[in-house]
Length: 264
Length: 287
Image (cartoon, rainbow over all chains, first blue to last red; front, side):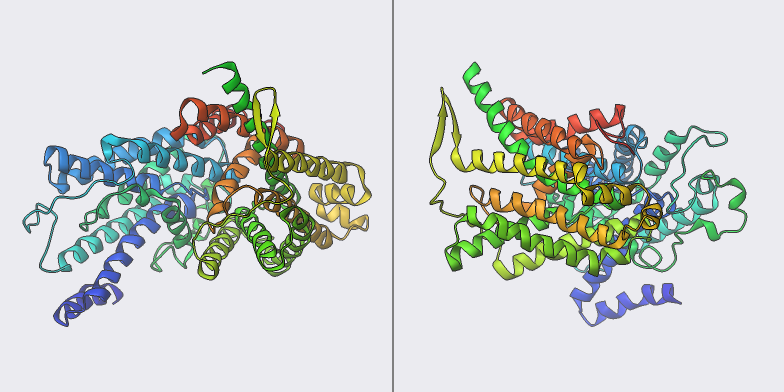
């Protein structure tokens, strides 16, 4: 029912020429995606990562750079961005996951600041002023729509649906069971896999969604990976259900989970 | 890059390091007591600096004289925050605790910006001014005084926690709240005291920093970040660790700033990550 409303309301808004509410809806979808991605690590695994903006920004920079330097369509840039963000998250996660709880949170803040400083000073990627997207003719392949923002909305909605779908899939998969439930981060030997690399995988899976929504014709700048965004990202999943009422944070309520809860 | 320049950097780094140590010590005390990281610590610092500013502007109170006033006011703030917010989330999941203090920090920062605008303000110094010349190394008096006052405060805190009855009571509460309660130590009151003292530490630091740093709503962020890193580097719950780590961070920042000015904080954080990866509990940590 809600999904139906979400699909139809934008059409109505567009007909009424209400641009701002449509924009708000687009941002809602974007933030829901980011929140769900954070939820996988924070809600299920109980690890608070305050440095997620890094992956968001990395994905954005990757696809934007590919577009400005090589002329690649953002549709190709999105998977490329995902790959880069995922690689970065594994690189960061693998050593950092031996820390737990507060130490991990602070480590992610530190990493975020390092990346932020590096990008501000790196002239090749635009330094502190960032990169501006070139204005291209309106087309799906260019990921730019000038006459209305409606296509952006449906893309964002699709992304959000994908993020929710993948969170759902993870929750029911083996990986989901390995993660334990919030508040008791899974530690120790897992059947069939090392403990830390598992969490790195967890870290990785959520990076994909983090990357998709950047092409709303905004310049990509280091502020995107700023702490305010990280703070916003970090705070948003705490809304009931991780942003839209459908994510479940407590695996402990899933029947059958107890038997393989690695926290025990 | 002469020896003189290097020594100058080391001296400056040491001075700032003591101030970082004071801020970190307050944070460490709070964490050691109840395992809650106060993510609003930087905003407490900012409030203390603004208090000093307004006292100087409105009542002509010299920034040095404001130190005890700020200490007292921030003690009250810490106690209020404990009573109003923290006491309710003591048993909440870690996520809730982190976000409660994080949210408080954002709230305080935004309120400060709303009330006082984002403009940078600076205080003229009447009592403390000029510089100290140590054979070629120049140190500004406000910074020297701030730094040694901070060092004295850290030592006072250490002696309080280690040698006095109340300090031992705080330690007991941090080890096992129920057992301490059985011994007649009121856990709630100890937590309140811990928050008050931790906040007044940062209040002292703020009043000292206001002597020579610009004051604006976001000023707390960087100091808080360095304080978290200092606490994690030194080990949560350890005041000695906070002192050591604060000094290390001050030195790395200053000397790193000599070589790669734009990346000096990268050096600090990279050092932190390096230490913490080999020794997750920090240098002197117990957890």
